[in-house]
Amino acid sequence: MGTVRLATSADAAEIVHLGALMYKAVGAKPTPTWAVDATRLVRDRLGRDLIGMVIDAPEGGLACCGLLNVAPRLPKPGAMAHQMGYVQWVSTAPQHQRKGYARAIMDALLSETDKRGIEVVELHATPMGRHLYEDLGFYIKQDNIAMMTVRGRADDPSADAEGL
Image 1 (tube, helix red, strand yellow):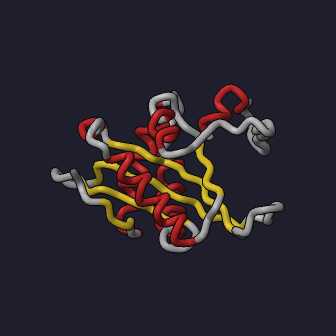
Image 2: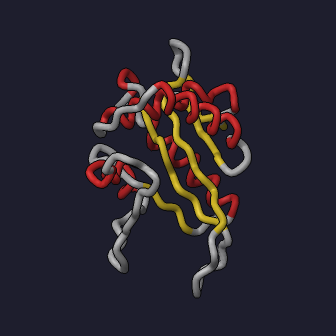
């Protein structure tokens, strides 16, 4: 199995490439403009409020990646952490799927949250990834309703809002 390592800014374009594959798999349509902007953002934020874990592909590039957004959080009663984590872009290149890479990436990201004392970690799962996340202790919240709004866009994103 491949070795997980911390992503660097030099990995940004490959991370975005794998992120685009994940988005395409759920019906989204990444554009070249999105890729340029996303690459810049990933490059600029890695090592600050964005933690990336990657596995190098033997043929070059990345076999798998995952990102953890670290954000401030107001504490709630019973919780001590002042940060929360949001996992995004856990994506494996098609030729490397079913090798345990996504689990290894998630284990590394969750280890990072443990080191930082982050108590709450959230994500949105694709149907294909749901079983992995449930195995790692993630669950569907029942105590409230997840809601969102998308503002400032001319199109109606409500049909694909889950993929944002």
